Image 1 (tube, rainbow, N blue to C red):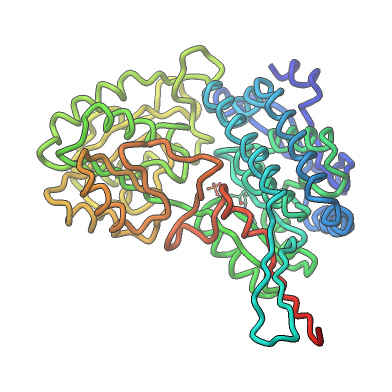
Image 2: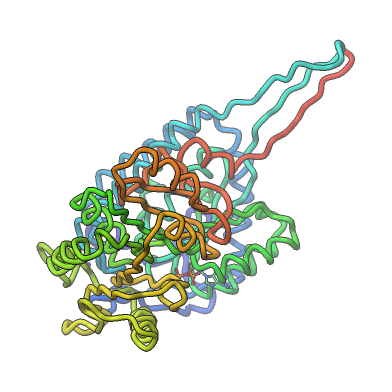
Length: 485
Ligand code: ADP
């Protein structure tokens, strides 16, 4: 597969700064591994502060030209990028599976999902409207203009190596911003392939740059720069808080997509089939490595036994293996540290009285494979219910009343996604309104789309990605008052 990718020109192994493929100044590199078999796929430069400063200069220099292009021009270049991403969905999907591990079908799905963000924001680029405000004084005219915020630093994680980039780069470029992308060192190859396609699509040199390596140094350089006007980040809550604090020195804008602790509430009056299908996809998609993944399955006592039986059967049907193999639905976790964390959460729950109903240990395939797992008798005090497990483990919490379910669901500092299964219209409204979450899926486990706002309440983040609201994070509002008319 790697050879095929190389021949397609999409296996890029250098950073992109000012339209040039670059090594680190000191020649250091970092290996990229396939989590399914531990093999080294490629090495990429281990960059730091110096290279980041170069990337910032390139992005800053490119800004004046890019922001002055007509919206239609930026739009058509983004549209080209969308077309190229779509045309190369197979190769990009293979690259995602190779470095991230997810099943190829899911990986190609991610490419399509990512490309659609670029298409959507190519369209939105043409709709950055201002306002004319009726003046309280007759000799004045008042206007509101929308302008790009400027140079954007975009720091992204490994779980969706392409989507997390397109959700940020799409609106940023559409608004006329230039970008420095810092992908995860675990999955830089997809980012570099996407950047290659961006160059091919007529996005000028310097408008989109990619650096990777020493994450804290790169992060610090982005933070310290007065030319970088915004940081957009998806990743862990801890790093997000650090970046938010760091941004205060230069008063940068910040958008954060941080961790979740999604409850999936199955009420007695739910459609069992829909509840099993929905809760399965929201828990096990990407082997549970998604911030909107269900972290706690809350099941009402009247449907508890029936649900557990049907859910267990569905989970047993999941096929674990190398994401490139036919029929596999569960890839490996990203690395061994992830497996250790998942297992420590499971052990903590067991030690506090939870029962393993299925799985509960490393998979016989070795490497970073973990068995799809269900644990029952979980309480909201256990580690697994307090923090994101980020793995294929479904902890089941039993509840009696709607009030109790809402109380448990909201008893967390996170507030990203929540899911509700019920056939009552009244209850679906009541519960959706009571949940302190940025996104609610009612009778549906797969809710993310480029046309809807993605983002969280509480410590799950700031700002929204996708939809018309996704543009706001990259725009400044300028008020112009014309006097003496
Ligand atoms: P995850 O648990 O998803 O790996 P992280 O927050 O560790 O979440 O990583 C998300 C992104 O943040 C990655 O690109 C990572 O390299 C980057 N990152 C990690 N630490 C820092 C830091 N101190 N400053 C800037 N970026 C960082």
